[in-house]
Length: 248
Length: 248
DNA sequence: CGTCTAATTGAAGCATCTCAACATGCGTGG
DNA sequence: CCACGCATGTTGAGATGCTTCAATTAGACG
Image (cartoon, rainbow over all chains, first blue to last red; front, side, top):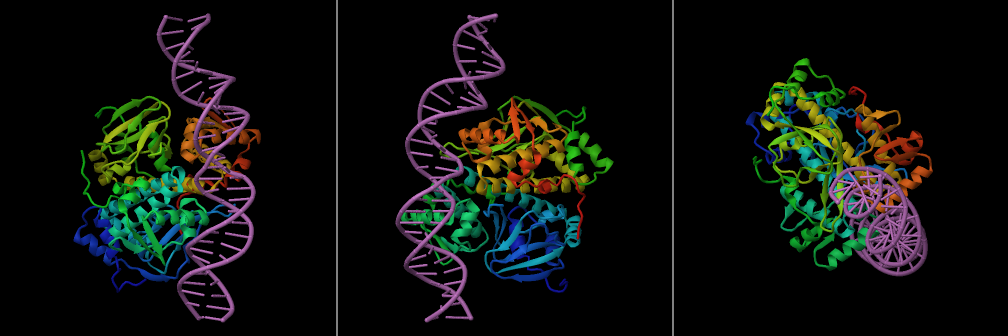
């Protein structure tokens, strides 16, 4: 554990602060968490099904997905995470994980001991509330994915995925205009949406021909945001990216 | 708000206690929450998309689902809740809800003001941790559903749904032997799994003919638990119903 | 250059859907 | 107590969105 250098917690803090204020003390406590940094290559496993990780993993840079494999060989990607995400906060409560977490691109994570997180949460309960809030937002994202996979056509499903991804990347300051990195392959996009690679390819072709998006070499550009959102039935409210919680 | 009668919190407390111990003080605080009871008929809306509920809803009896409707008229059910569930704990953080919560059968809920929950969480932080834990388990359930809808055949998908439902009902003490109430219609089961009513019907017929389950008049019996679990690829570990959290 | 991964396209098959008809059961009003 | 209506379940037949298999192209990288 590196207890001398500060934790590069800026992406996490930025994310938590979109959810509500954090005291200077809490922020300082986050920066001073003991931690180890781990660099992981592209398409490597971070945590494996049935692991009982002794640490909490904070995503600093890169991109990871949760996935499982079914007996017939199919793979389902269940969520995607960009920097600032805490990958296994559930391991504060659950001992095992029931899925695999793996990288899409070269990725950097920080490992933080359960004990240190627990101490921080006791000293700064507001951090726990922000992290719980984040858990709730991820649950909302998961529900949207379920709706895509269950009830939307391949076109709408892919359009929704792209819309959500771009909005999240923009909120994380990782989008230039209408262009951002897009770290998935067509095969991985299919695994996220319950589609075959072939069908993803054909459907993307139509979206491209309709002038909505282009996608080359891991870089994606949206040319017609409103058109894309419309066929996606996309509304970013569930991502809770702006408004301070109003209450009736 | 009824501040005189005790909140019938037994199902909630039983559920939270499967996750870890609660102090007698915390339990007493739960029983003494000010609340209002609301009885709701079958197939009624409890909370509607874009509502900003002023209360937290605790499910005391009955059964509810979260769902949304897509522009093409499809409906996706994203989760199902049995007594003991807190239906909108996310409204402690998020002002609006992005889906509809509706009853499957006649249902009783308790309404508790945000302020009273917040006070309780400040006085008994362990209750917050248990509820957060529960949020994480619901997220795990949601990931399993996504896997079913995205990558499993209709047979496996329905078998998985039934397996999970029966295990959850049993854990809640609402199962007699291999028989329990099954509050969904075939159409609703289809909406949960992204299938048409017709296909649910045909698939159920095959499961019945294979001697796995019978289902009549809202009552379901599993005749071959191992066979059902096998085609479902079902393992109940993600429901976290037994073991106290071991740690490496 | 040769090798590997990812993208692309064609063709055929099938799991699941849609449309449509009919059966069953249950609550309600006459 | 019967008749009707409505929700739910059941079955048939035809249509289709998506899959699978297979082959080819294009880029990236040592």
